[in-house]
Structure formats: structure tokens, C-alpha cells
Amino acid sequence: MRNDTDGTAPATPVADPGPRFDRASAVADAVLYEGYLLYPYRRSSGKNRVRWQFGLLAPRRWIEADGPVTPVLAGSAESWRQQTECLCEAADDAIVHVRVRHLQLQQRQVERREPDGTFTPVDQLEAGGEVYLPFDEAVPHETDLTVPLAELLAAGGRRRGFPVHSPGGEETEELPGGSGRLVRRRRPLAATATVSAERLDTGRPAFRLRIRIANTDVSVGPDTPREEALHHALIATHTLVGGHGLAFTSLADPPAWAESYARGCRNEHTFPVLAGEPGSHDLVLSSPIILSDHPQVAPESPGDLHDAAEIDEILSLRTLLLTDEEKREARATDRRAAEILDRVDAMPPEVFARLHGTIRSLRPSLDPCDLTDH
Image (tube, rainbow, N blue to C red; front, side, top):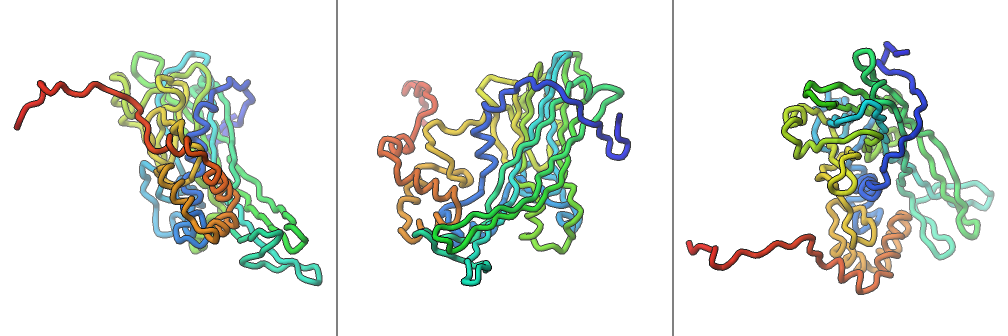
């Protein structure tokens, strides 16, 4: 039955057609943690004090405190919603699989154990030879919906809605020697995603798919400080679209039949591109960061550095030059920072050599006889 209140239909279980989302996993993970932690990876660094730059979907009342936000193509602007529109050709039995991915902020608090057994929050604590600092971490989440395309087209077009909720929680971790503990807290997130489809008048089995994601939290007011509102926000929100019997069309370089429809696609705070191996058309990655079709992580890259437009060689060399005290603070800041330091410190010379430069393609140089003197 259709829900006349929000225009969504209840989910019907459908066998998973097995989309090859794994082929885009490395790029999707890079999007997920883009800007998560920036060089020099220390909490005291100014650029690690104002974080979560991409794909932020916060409560609507907080976002619109100064008026409605004009939709933009990429996701560097904070919003309460995101919309993806993409084009595809599809078989009669096509099945659509949508996966929404995002981060949930997790506050890590450091607490010292007092002589009477109680705990006191502190800004720094040393235990077992390591330093521990309070910091905002993040927990990744994925939500999936699988639905036959025919169901989306039934009765003049239906919207299938599904919750994109992330539960709150609290965990504690005892520190060495019983000197204190880490307390990690998360607030519950409330959001919905809706999927719809429309047939295109092209004389071929072509369709437009639309995925809308909206933060539905109503507990955060317009005057709430950003630090608090972030606890109720979806961070680095992006979408993968695949399925069975679907062939997606590039919006950046569409075929002739799709040019006008590609121009008519309305993408808000996100941009869909073909994903997977070059030449494939069965997967779309809709990202808050503008990418080219079939984006790939450079094969010589030894691991993510979380830095926007990162250049592995430069960042790796600069990380090596951090002082011992700076490295100690970076390790105390975040587990992922410690992993970067360990990887760079252990990187063999031949890996550094590969980072220095790679030729992706070769083409003949011009014949000197073809050059004209001006």
C-alpha cells in the first residue's frame, strides 16, 4: 500500500541480484574518509579543528536557520538533503539496488580514574607509555534497498522509501594500568531515502532514476552550536546504484539520444558518475566530491592519507619529517593517524620510488617537420 503522507511504499524483500559494488569500494572508501583527518594529523592543527567538509546532511531547522539553502552540484556546502538523478537503459526484469553510505560522529572522551574510583574527564592522559587525547572519531554505516524497476513504475510511478537510521550508543575502553578509560558516545541519526523512476520518451527502454536522502531529525533547533548539530548529521554521505539488467549512461559524456535528458538531470549536493572498470556501465557512484567517470585509486598508492587531492609522495615525505613529539600527538589524536605513521615509517625505498611519478599513457611526439615556425 502507498503511504499518502510521504508518498513512499513499504519495502518488499527481493533477492539480492549481487551488484558489483566491490569494484568501487576503494574509491567509495576514499570518498567516505575524504578530509576525515588532514596532515599533519594532529588534534592541535587548525585544519583538524573544523572538520567534516563533504557530504554533510544535518537537521533541516539548523541548516535553514538563515533561510533555505540553494542546491549546489558538489557537497562542500552543508545541507539537509541530497538528490541523485541518473539515466539508464533497463531490461523488463531489471532490479535496482541502492546503497547509502555515511559516517556517524563518535565523541571520544578521556577520563582519569580518581582514588575513590570515580572518573574525571581530562584533556590528556598518559597510560602504558602512550598519550590519549579526546577527539571526534567516526563510525561508517551502509543501508541497502533492492527493488524491481517495474514496481517503481507501477501505477504511474511509485516512490520506495526506506530508513537510513544509525543507532546511538556508548562503549568504554579501559586504559593500561587502570589509570583511566576512553568513553565513546554516539547520538542516534534519523534520515530517510526514497527511490523513484520514470520512463523516458526516447523510443528505447530508457529511464531516469532518482534517489533522495533527507535528514529527518527534529530535535535540533536553529540556534544549536555546530559542534552539537554534527552529532545529529550524516557525514560524507554518498550513494552507490547498481542492480541487475541495468546499463547506466554517463552524464558527463552521454550518447546522442541521452544528451537532453542528461542536461535535465537535477543533482543536488552530489554528482553521479559511472563507476567500476573503464568501459563498464552497470554501476554508479554518486559522490559529494566531483569525480570523472570510472574513478580509480592510483595502483601505486600504498594507502589512504585522507587529505583532499592528496599527493602521496609529498604527504608521505612530510609525514616522515614530523618530529617525535608531533608524531606522538598524531598517534594520540586518532587510530587512523597512527596507521598512517606506521605505514610511512615502514615504507621501503622501492615504494617511495613508485610514488615519484607514473606515466599513465604514451602517445607519439610530433614529427619536427610538422612544426611550423611562427
